[in-house]
Image (cartoon, rainbow, N blue to C red; front, side):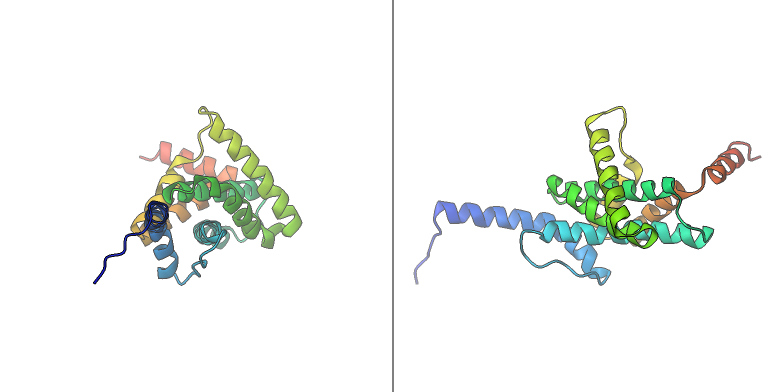
Length: 193
């Protein structure tokens, strides 16, 4: 019996592949448990998986809002949906150690989420505008992105926790509430006896 040792280059590549596989595992398990397709190995694997998880979480928030309000998303709400896609994509990309993948995932996610409301061309434009604003916010520490949604999304995937997914959806739905309803809720909360 002989023991074959890989060359240093092969060993380094295998080691890196194992580490990357371990980083991706929570996201892939999150998708599998929810019967969402896991992307096959390839250049777009991480981006495709990030898109599926992002759309799943943000769409849950949009559905909660739509169920409660039964009206179209206005322009402000469309922007908030695209921003939520950026926040969730960024958070999940950081979780799997692929920070550079957030932007493409956010663009595709936001376009998919907004397509039924405003059409693909307008959705692509809105997604690009939201990603640009989000990128600027990342560079300016005084305009931090929505950290609570970000934290909850990462926890939801890392722990494969449906309660945290529900919390992300609830927070997104709250952000979509009409301005006058938010003022009413804030007033009621402040002056509740």
